[in-house]
Length: 440
Image (cartoon, rainbow, N blue to C red; front, side):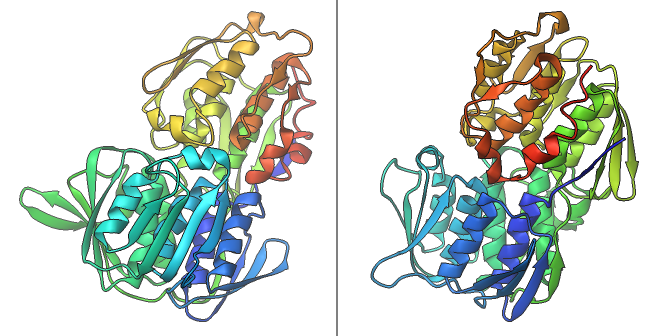
């Protein structure tokens, strides 16, 4: 059996660092994912009033900014998020709860990714928001003396991170009600991770749903999703509690090894995964079951066995980061796989519908992009690629890691930028060597 240890969760790492950085007093955060994205979040907070020191591998001491990030007075503090959409969207809201001027900017692709909906919400809370380039995209300059107002609306159609950012900023207000609007809600589990982090840091809030004409308090942990126009979040003013916090393992980055376990010749055990995790990408376990994989959930990990897979029809709106992985895995299944409800993937690090389709076609996989998803019509016998084929990563970590699954059919393949995995999983290639030789 091949043994893999899942790295720390990127999503949870961001939220734990933000909570500790907004606290009053000193905290210790252990198990932090050490990656380019987290380095951006840590660096920005170090420039905006918190003090974050690395004690050892994945362990940080954080002296918080007491709920008020510090911006510049004449010139804005430069907040370079590079390619981290999580850093950009969460910190745009959190920094707006501070005092002074902040300039949020990043890599060229980041300057094409929308943030206008969040910017509009911040403007209703008396923050001056100005865009330097494309209207509604970074670079964006915030001029703020705190969030003012008691109510704001946001949707989950484009990104759940807008709501998560507002939730994380809300304790620094005099109390804030956030109304969920729009036509649909995607990526709800990521909001659950935010609410869980807020609870751990001692923040008081309620989640209510409209039943008839009355708002009823609900247990958010029982939600499969939220209902636009009928869900609201009421956050009371408060200070994040300093203390000791630990980050759990990452189901997202474990997904590549879970998939590999079905394709190789030996079972793969991935440790450091919580069976009761709120991470949306825990859905990989269920998706593999639906595809016919032999997979077992243990107390602190998962074991997956070589399996004959079948195609499925699946709504992945709550786990969009898994789409490139499932699309690549579907190339080995018997029968068609249809992935739905992920139109918002077009505004990720790359267009994560067009990009997987383009690269899978290079390997002879019949792939079709639809209005809100992707269809894979596999023919295992037809999977091949001409000598010298280079698979493009689009500088997207999830593209590089998911396309690695093609090695089980093609043997060693060449990528244009293997280093892009440093964004979320710097040790990926070293770990991948443990599973990649086990090909059928």
